[in-house]
Image 1 (cartoon, rainbow, N blue to C red):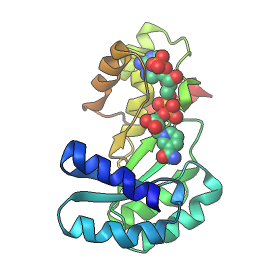
Image 2 (tube, rainbow, N blue to C red):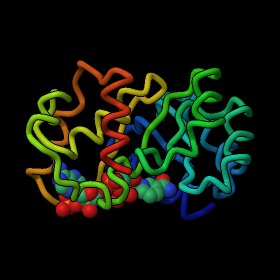
Image 3 (cartoon, rainbow, N blue to C red):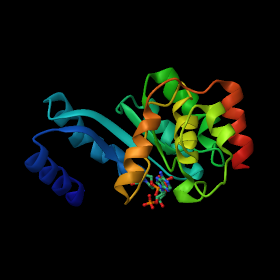
Length: 180
Ligand SMILES: NC(=O)c1ccc[n+]([C@@H]2O[C@H](COP(=O)([O-])OP(=O)(O)OC[C@H]3O[C@@H](n4cnc5c(N)ncnc54)[C@H](OP(=O)(O)O)[C@@H]3O)[C@@H](O)[C@H]2O)c1
């Protein structure tokens, strides 16, 4: 608890306010929500979020979402990691909770695929990593993807995947087949 409060103190000192404060991996989520909710009510935090990386925690994640205390959710989603599609994404959509996707590139495991130019053209993208990011963003329930990179050129190329047009069902299936 103390560490979370200290992190928040430093965030406010640096940024002035916080757009999304996430309770990671459901750690003491009720207790953290108790002190974070008044901060949101006071306007120092825009949105409170909750995250988990493991499908084994999705039941508890569902309970946290149903508590009505959170505005955003962060879970893994990519063509090889789709557990959240079963219950968590429908629940988030039902409750109007915004969805942030972690591991959109499968922690880098999916990016090495050699994909022919004409396939990329069919998808309307310049690169395979862009196709993977657009695949996740084309799910109507998804609001944001957060690909990690240490490479500024990758960051620039990845950002280009953040604009429409989004993939239709057939384009999404094509990305899934190529990722299998
Ligand atoms: N519990 C949690 O809340 C939690 C848990 C895990 C992760 N996360 C967050 O989720 C985000 C995703 O991180 P992740 O590492 O798990 O997975 P990821 O974004 O699926 O993959 C990152 C990997 O993809 C590579 N990459 C990125 N863009 C590329 C490009 N254009 N071309 C080629 N390679 C590219 C990166 O290497 P380069 O550096 O070479 O680009 C890196 O190795 C992070 O921001 C992380 O903090 C949160």
